[in-house]
Amino acid sequence: MRHYTLNELEKLTGILAATIRVWERRYNILKPKRTYTNRRWYDDDDLRRLINISLIYHSGMKISKIARCSESELEEKADFLTSDSVSSDTHVNSLIVAMLSFNGNAVNEILLRSIINSGFEETFSNVVFPFLRRVGIMWHTGSVNTGAEHFITNIFRGRLISAIDSLPPANDPTRKRVIMYLPDNEMHEMGLLFYSYLIRKLGHEVLYLGQATPFIALTETNEKWHSDIIVTGALSYLSISEPEKYLKNLSSAFKSQKILVSGYLADEPVIEKYKNIYPIRSVSDLKKHF
Image (cartoon, rainbow, N blue to C red; front, top):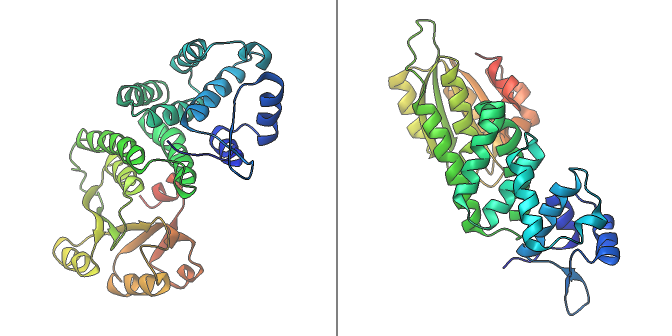
């Protein structure tokens, strides 16, 4: 059972901490526990309840009426709203509830509804990645179980791989050859997989090396495969301790290639020194190079 502070609840639900306090005092919607220093803390059940209340409240129901609902009534109303909604925020909140309860069927149903309503690319851009950023906040505060994070990211990963496999082979004679990889120690590949899907969908040929690729393996692969573009990235400084040196080595080793970098590497000021390296901070940034 995880512990959440009031500020963490605000970040995870979008309801202001001051509003939560008022609702507690007036309507008794939550019953916070107290530390020995008398500070509030909340558990997973409180978070799920507050997310359900948030969904119902934003649908137009008054909080005074919501407060009179039983737990089962709250869940029933929230489930109905979720099943009928096309809102990205609603899907993100629903994914958090599904993740915390390890409900794989619910995760897949939410994804399917969003894909039907908005399309695959929009679902990942507007639902999955905003959700993962929210989970990142939870992870850094110690308020999400690592198992829960792995459980849901593997569902997303499976969806991406399935979508990539369903694309036709690249056969346009003007297609580009693209090597995609993550540096040593970088294991977070969701963004790279999504970019791989987008590039494949645009009709280009991708050689996907994936997680934690040693630099020497990258150079040896390129010598044999002769890529036009190399795509990489890093989620944080933890995987690349000397980003300036890494970018310099990339630029020098692949002088004939266009190099696209995302995440932490894209924000390095030194990147402007290298004429063959381009920062990628969005889908539109990526697509303009293809």
